[in-house]
Image (cartoon, rainbow, N blue to C red; front, side, top):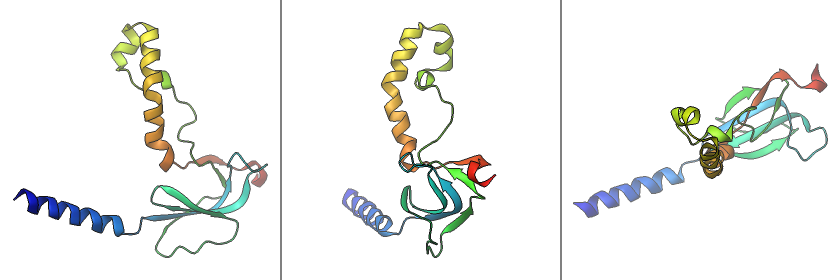
Length: 135
């Protein structure tokens, strides 16, 4: 019985691993990548699964992809939040208020890498305002 269950689980895992990842195409954005001066204007960004597969100012063919019109906004890959306290990531709210702040800080420091790595590889954010170059 255990062998059949294990075989079924392995078969299901290999089938799901062979499927193509979901694609999302974000068009009409200015990409701030932190490398190019001024970013990449009027770009298209293809995301496959949780990875950025392509960034181009030329159209990107992605049949079946979910298409999001960025509306001229700025895309900042990797930015998940513009204001976040690593200090509080790993402490219950009650201990943040009642415990010694040094203990809260230590728990935050020890847990912040794991917290960030859980969300950074898959994150993409569109700013709520148009890019300065398009105002």
